[in-house]
Amino acid sequence: AVWSSIWTLARARTTGQRGTTDSILLDFDAGYLSTLILAIGFAMLGAGVMHGRGIAFESSSVAFAGQVVDLYASQLGEWTRPVVATAAFLTMLSTTIAVADGFPRTVAAFVEAWSRPIPKAGEKGARTRGAGKAATRNDSIVPTLIMSAIADSIERHEQLAGKLLPSAAVATPAAPAETSPDAADLVRTKALGSPRIYWAAFAVIAVGAAMILMTVLGSHTGGFKVLIDLVTIVSFLVAPVLVLFNHLCIIGAEVPREHRPSTLWQAWSWIAIASTSIFAAIYAFTLLKPWLVSLAVAPTPAG
Image 1 (cartoon, rainbow, N blue to C red):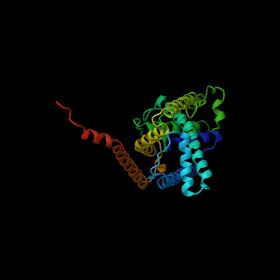
Image 2: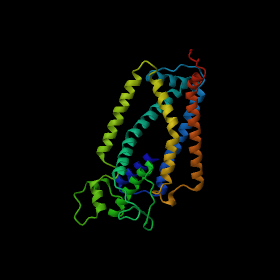
Image 3: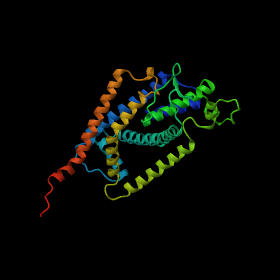
Image 4: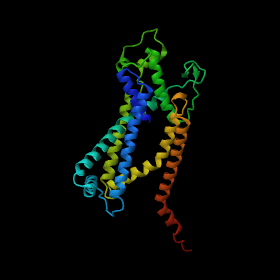
């Protein structure tokens, strides 16, 4: 949700037009629902085709990919071979592009929010909502800081010209003496964070990914399967935390009340937080169960 918000703001800065709430929500819902449908489809295909067949999967990434395609083709027909291969490739490519861009943008926005002095309620320059009332902030929540950076950058644009300006406007010459502090600050900074931080974060994730791939895929202790297992475990255990962060973002003080989810949707969100937490706990227990059993049945040392 944070990545989607940052991409929406970046597009608005590029085009110079701020979309309506309905158009932004439609764009988010389209991506969310398509991802949900694809996820359910892949889970059903995986359960029906791969699970419980007693097949030892290859440790090599190339061999594993070919094995997966062969499994689907043998069960669904040869005509599905190019379809499955293309879908798998596009899934991995789109994920790589999204992470390679979304992660650095989030880091840049986070650093901007973290480094900017945050005025207290009632002080000059405090961020306001509606009829000038100071917003109540909870700065102990990291997602709130990120949301603050996004909301604050929009406000600074609107204070300067009444609407979002094209990105070229950020590179204009030094502001005249009568320019307000907010406008001068807009000229000097990027609304979505420093480009230097963006490219530094991009370099870190690129080098880190390369090191992980060379270390894991080059090993003789499981290779690609070890990498898949690691990603699966981390994703499953971190999911409740991400769900909670998303919930705190959308109900935070930076989001006007009229744009927050209804009470019914907030209740549904808490159900999602509880269910993902329960599933993560069950999954963690399943992973730790062999180790716990080994401790329980371990022989007592003699003497």
